[in-house]
Amino acid sequence: MWCDKLGLSVNPDKTGLAAFTRRRKLPGLFEPRLFGTTLHCSTSVKYLGVIVDSRLTWREHVDLKVKKAHNLLWACRRACGVMWGLRPRVVYWIYVSIIRPSITFASLLWWPGCQMASAKRILRESKD
Image 1 (cartoon, rainbow, N blue to C red):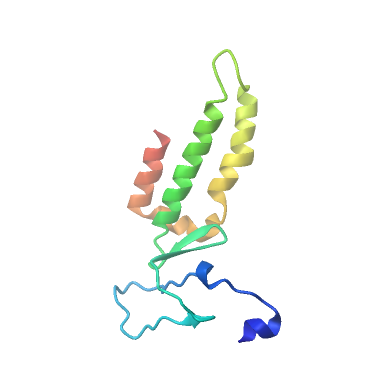
Image 2 (cartoon, one colour):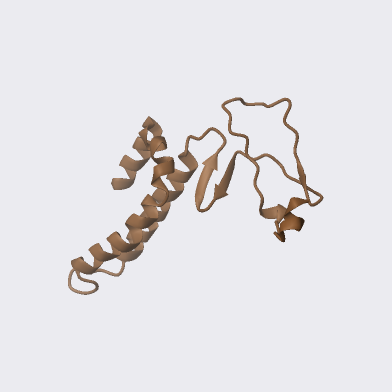
């Protein structure tokens, strides 16, 4: 196999396979084998922190980003009080340096998914 020739190692258990199509069934698709392990088709795969689904709707990725940002914001908010805790300037710095980069990571790929009505609704509800 070409991986062995180049000195690369591949873990078949961590390898995902997704067919990017709008069809529900693919009659001619076979499940390939990698190092004796059959790779099964899934509806989504994670690549470099971005969840890519087979229909390229980005819904699963947007949902995960909204939940993660919400949890990070609440974690920062618990560190603040009216008379104690972090100053507003520090909280803003945490937002700019931690929360905003986690939301916008690879946004050039998945921003078209935010133009759909369902994603807009999810993002709008997360503000409340």
